[in-house]
Image (cartoon, rainbow, N blue to C red; front, top):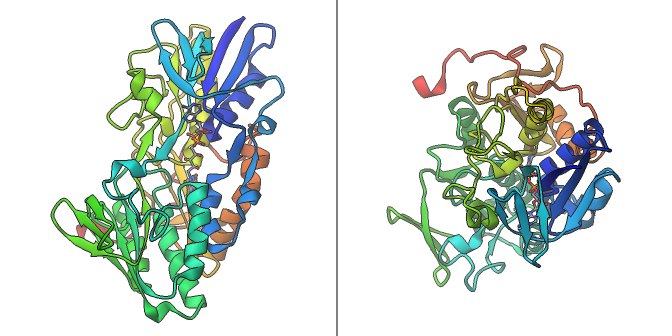
Length: 417
Ligand SMILES: Cc1cc2nc3c(=O)[nH]c(=O)nc-3n(C[C@H](O)[C@H](O)[C@H](O)COP(=O)(O)OP(=O)(O)OC[C@H]3O[C@@H](n4cnc5c(N)ncnc54)[C@H](O)[C@@H]3O)c2cc1C
C-alpha cells in the first residue's frame, strides 16, 4: 500500500482528498486526512455572523461527513513532520508514515503577535471576526454599540480573504445607517497598504466606495502596539488611532508545527513552486491552500482552482512523469458592499482585477469590479456551492485558469493618472 497523508481537513484538504480518492486505485493507495477537530466551518460565513445574517450553527458541519467514506480521518493535532524520515508525529505521540504528504493546515489569526491586543480590552472593545468565537462575540458588541469611533483594522499582509475587512467596513456602515445611528458613528479603515486594496485598479474602485460612504482611510498604518488603557492603536511611525470599538484582523500565520519541522518561512508558510505547489527542496511534499507562500490571495477560490491543476499533476508525478499543469494564481472573490449589493474580482499572478463580465463575456451574469445585486446573490449562493459541489470535489463549470474573455482595461489606469 502507498500512503498519501493530507494534513488539514479544511477547504483544500477536503477537496483534494475527495478528488484523489476517486482517481487513486483503492487496492494500492491509502488516503488519510489529519485534522485537530471534527468541525468544518464555512469561513466566508464568519463575515455575516456579527450582523446576525447567519447564526454560528448555520455554517458548521461535521468534517467526517464532508469526506468520502474511503478516506481515513485521524483526529489529532500535528506536532511535527520529519521530512527525512517521511513521518508525521501528533501531539499525543501517535506517528503516521507517508509516501506523499500534502500540507493543508491553512493560516490562523494570531492576536498574541501584537502587544496589547490580548490585554484587558480583548473581546470588550477589541474584536476579530476571523474566528467563529470572535464573530459571535462581535455580534453582541455591535448590538450594544450606540455611537463613537469605530475602527476596522488590518495588522499586516498577507491575510486570508484580503477583501473581507473592506466588506466588513461596508456592511458595518450599512448596518449603522439602518439602525439610524450612522451620524453618531465615525468610521475609520486602518490598513498597512497604501490604499484600499493591493492592486491599483481595484484599489481605486474600492477606495472610491469607502469615500462615498464617508469611511476615512488611514493608509500605510503599521501597528506596533495597542494601548488598552487609552484604547489607542499606535503605529511604528508614532501615529495614533483612538477607538471606542476596534474590529481588527490580527496577523495571519501558518501553523506552528510548520516552523517546528523546518518547513516554513518567517510566517510559517511553506515555500513552494508557484505553478506545481511542490515544496521547495522536497520531492514528495506539496502545500495547498493558505498554507503555501504563493503570491496570490489566500482564498477558498484559490484552493479550488489550484486543486484542479494539482490533481492531474500529482497523478503524473507518482508515475514518474513530468508535471505539465501550471497553476496561474487564479483567484475570484465576491465583495459584499452592503444594501444587498456586491462586486466581483477575478485575477491571477500576472493580471490584476479588471472590469468586465464573468464567467461569460457580455452575458455574465456577474459584473466585475462593479456593484450589482447579482454579485450579492452569487456570494450567498456560494455557501451551497461550497458544501455540495466544491468540498465533495464535483466538477464545477468554471475554468481553473483565469480568462481574459469579457475583461477590458479601463481607459485611464488610476495609478498612472
Ligand atoms: C472572515 C473570512 C471570510 C472569507 N471569505 C472568503 C470568500 O468570500 N471567498 C473565498 O474564496 N475565501 C474566503 N475566505 C478564505 C477561505 O476560507 C480560506 O482561504 C480557505 O478556507 C483556505 O483553505 P485551507 O484548506 O487552506 O485552510 P482551512 O480551510 O483553514 O483548513 C485548515 C485546516 O487545518 C487544520 N489544522 C491547522 N493546524 C493543525 C494542526 N496543527 N493539526 C491538525 N490540524 C490542523 C484546521 O483545523 C483546519 O481544518 C474567508 C476567510 C475568512 C476568515
